[in-house]
Length: 408
Image (tube, rainbow, N blue to C red):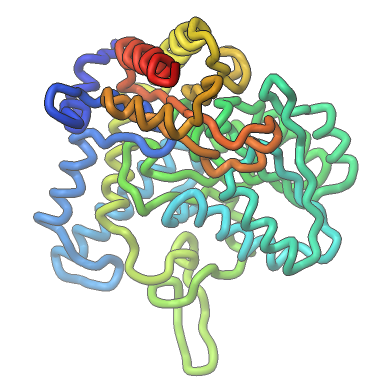
């Protein structure tokens, strides 16, 4: 199937809007959240219009339809990451909750004082704070794979850390700041060789290129719907069956139980023992529709398009005096360009760009330790997706030149 950028852009209603009269939107903040195609919006509206009911409990027509849609979406999402079974796909609120689920269940039940968890210096706060909290509670050790000046992980130091016998290695497959695509398969292999389990933060990878949990042999994978053209408020945790079955429940309540008595309860089977209460049903439907949409275009085609746009963006940004782009070269980089402009605060850059309709992110992007590593308080970040164009990049560059002129 040919990658038809013009047709793809027509699928996203928000890309047709003007942020103010005569100023069309240039959306370069997909790393924060992706825009939603009509296929997702229509699927969620159809659920609410025609099949809205609670799931798993009712035997009436609407309840059965809602349950079918909810479970069909789980099958689609599981297929999207090549999970062996949909039973291994747990619905959560987002990547953050997926990581917290592992910390509160597997880690709390399995780790003892002095045990080591290996993380990296490029992690999002979602993959730092849960482990800080657990380490304080259980007297665990946290060690960090260093990031090199080029924005790559220092794999020689990683191998030294593995000699200390970690119980868990948890890391991002792609940095939300540097765009670094880490060698996840090799890192997972080395971790297993050292006797550790692995948790992969796939928030930035799953939406942008094909991720196969079986090929990676990863133990846990966390990701969100809203970064892959789906709705906010829903995410997923993949886990190996033996691990998920051994883990205690996460939250208590309805639907996560097999039976309840006044003095005892028995948890439900997978995946339901981790899904307490009425879930985000319409959002699950939208999540499944997003996976269908991206699959229809082809993840390889999406990755190739992003690679081309990012390469063009790096070339254009390097032309601008005073701009410094962080992270590796295009060979190891996904669709992210975090940068600073000499003499101008990143928030000022973003605010002035917004006057021309160019939406970028400014701040530490929930990766404060990484910014401290590079001795900067913040960056401006442009990020790209399947609907991004060379014209978007040109508008960004024109806007940065305006910022430079404004600040003299």
